[in-house]
Length: 260
Length: 103
Image (cartoon, rainbow over all chains, first blue to last red; front, side, top):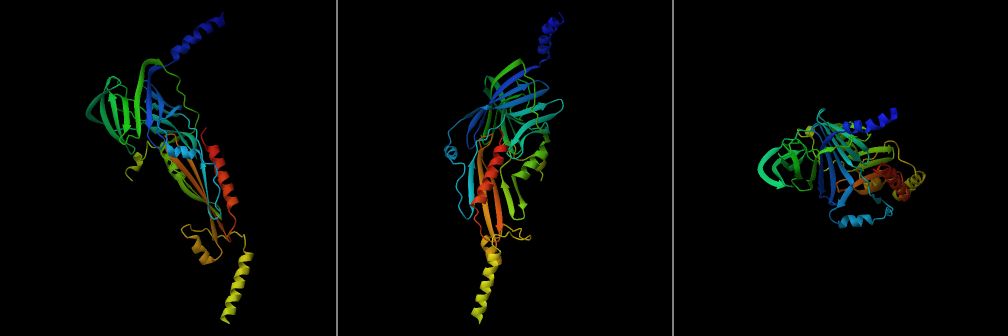
């Protein structure tokens, strides 16, 4: 009998324990060397915001000749005798990009991934974006939207937000507008987000960030810059020089670098 | 007399270079890369720099083509066959890249 009670009541408690909120689905377009699109799921409540950019939803938007040639490269090209040059091509598998913004603690967590540093989570205060509202309106997905612009971390953004949905959220780290951001793009059109669907009062999945090392954003950026271009002596007759581009296309200059 | 002196000097220099064959450079030879290899040869007569460049092409999470370059400079007293060293360096970098590559 005791087990029957447990069986009957446990699922009820489990359901009541779950959080309800808004589910947003965005599509993002990246127009770089290999143009691609990807789906982003966002789970939002009044207290927090959780975004998953799903790598398994990646689609190549256009075929790219340079990349096709690259894929045909042999892994190791034979050396010349005097000075050697070896070219390798790797198909890197990237993990989902997660962003979690806790409004109560004012902290923003982002998963980051780098060839040298592996996967980590950066932690920062929720960034404040100074949106300037422009007197332009349009309808996106049957929602009346207003335009706003801002420069955030070295990138000029244009957004279309709606007052009909008073959630101060949007894709990636774009937030703080008077209403939900329905569409956003960089001024150079290299990055473009568009809201596809919105569902209210849905049971949200449990928010769980992966078990990775947490690192302060500034500390992480300093580390990235350091490893991106450095030299060292392996021994007294061997010098190693490394070069790589490490910053993401979203953040070129940070607040603490602007006054330098 | 002058010719004999020069010939003798050349012989000594040649013998010296033979003895020095395959030796690594001494402690103060943390060479400055800005110095061209030919200049090194002219000034010291015995130093060689061998450059092994490994470039790794990959596409980042946003579709940008990226190049990761790791160059290794080996400094020698005399010229060596460097192909093997460079293969070894390339394989080490490739192996590390495989390990570090997110999966």
